[in-house]
Image 1 (cartoon, each protein chain N blue to C red):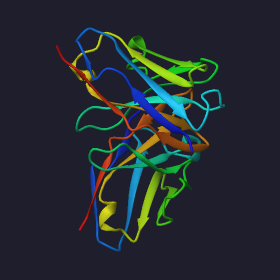
Image 2 (cartoon, rainbow over the protein chains, first blue to last red; image 1 turned 90 degrees about the vertical axis):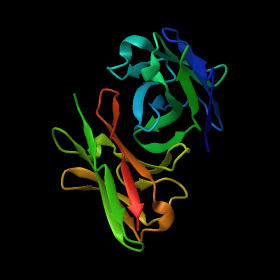
Image 3 (cartoon, helix red, strand yellow; image 1 turned 135 degrees about the vertical axis):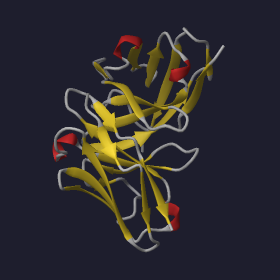
Image 4 (cartoon, each protein chain N blue to C red; image 1 turned 45 degrees about the vertical axis):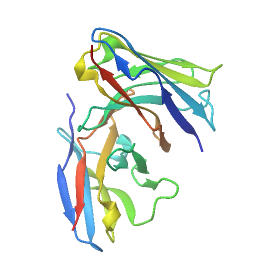
Amino acid sequence: QVQLKESGPGLVKPSGTLSLTCAVSGGSVSSSYWWSWVRQPPGKGLEWIGEVYHTGNTNYNPSLKSRVTISVDKSKNQLSLKLTSVTAADTAVYYCARLDQLIQHEWGQGILVTVSS
Amino acid sequence: QTVVTQEPSVSASPGGTVTLTCGLSSGSVSTSHYPSWYQQTPGQGPRTLIYNTNTRSSGVPDRFSGSILRNKAALTITGAQADDESEYHCVLYMGTGIWVFGGGTKLTVL
């Protein structure tokens, strides 16, 4: 069973860039699945950020598209998220997940990122 | 902008049956939206219960079932238990590579 684990700084300054990675084990990012990032602000619901395919093709939430970059590193078997120009509204638990139409969805444990000076 | 709707809160009696729904602000939900359902308890990440409308994830009891009911995706819990008390999230695939989550439903078992 595939396992996902997020890592990165837990604190980012306003106007800075949030950068996270997700290590994939028990499976390969080169498999024919889409890999997503999802976030959850404290006390709120889930928000899909975007997804990447092993080819590097991406799709993004239109509301975040101008600030988001998601990429895949096949040599390290991981995916990455970059979110620029962050504000306090970007404070959330960030999850990586395999969300694909026809296969079981898998989630990482999540990582809390706080935007504060 | 497409909004995915869920009941903010629902209650169930122990041993009873409860259905949570996942709809669209405009239009009907179909299997082409590949609806999925997740259970989340406080401080924990989401646990996948159902994907692709009605396929249970491994290890999920068969008292959890998914369906399309009156133009909405539905999650039915048969024989509700105290530890089913959680937040339940649904997500729909909108095509063109976009997923949209609902706001979540808080289930109380009392």
